[in-house]
Image (cartoon, rainbow, N blue to C red):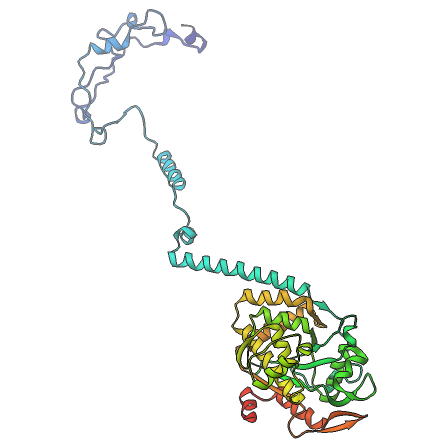
Length: 436
């Protein structure tokens, strides 16, 4: 056998007559009678019995074993289970690893996914949908509003050269915007035209209200740009709209944050954009407008409470022959109050339509940021009351003739005191109580 030769096998050292007892002691024989082993031949004991299994003449061991009558050992309970393979040893560690891997693969979604959109209750899904729609609507409104702001005509803001800001009354809770209505004629420089109406809109965030103050155009005051006294409405003829602001600040001591100028065409567009304004027209007022078609643009008015169009509202505001300028400015404040009421009750789309239509006719020295902040403050204060006043105040003025013209002479210091108190200190309830 070459393999044995290579390994140094010495057949002479083989034990031929081994007489050692290899039987199992009785007290250790747990299986009863010793079985005959497949490799034990009946007449083993001589050298001739050695079989070379590697040769071609080797004995078929399987057929040989079948000739023995050997009783197989009994199986225990685990071995009796179906699928038991005695020749395979179970690797429990490997099975545990496979089971753990299977659990990780089939692990349910993490806990936070319980709050996914699919798992939300219907009410929350609807709420999220509504919020998304509202957010999209707000963004759209802001975009359109920004477009409207881009259509406004902006002037450069100028500091008052005639009075320092420290001498003016101001408050972080009050925004004063001077609204100027001008009767600009064709081929006429806008800023050279006299202001037909001057109204200070005070947004009082402290008392949550809006206060309107009309300045009568025939009021005799000192005009700084003119360096002399003149009618208030002539201030724009000397230094434009900034000249009007400077004159009001110089004489009445209130800080004006900026101006907004609107001509007659813009006024009509504004009224029509909000759907008209409701006004109670007297018979005398209706007769004045209907009797002078050329003066009022061929407009017809009926006595009674009606919703006026832009042209009708403009004609109503311009009435002045039948009474005084005091009553005329009151009509203007009435229409402005009605416009604000329409804006307050209007939906966002109507407001955007109003802004888009009227923006090209507006001129202001306020920046876009200032306009946005002022509009937000105004929308908040619109929920409160609106009160109105005019300068000069009661018992502070008298008619006079100056330079051959009929004007309104006033006590400047008294009006300054009353105006500051009215704008910055008084509640709307106090104002209404004084006017009864």
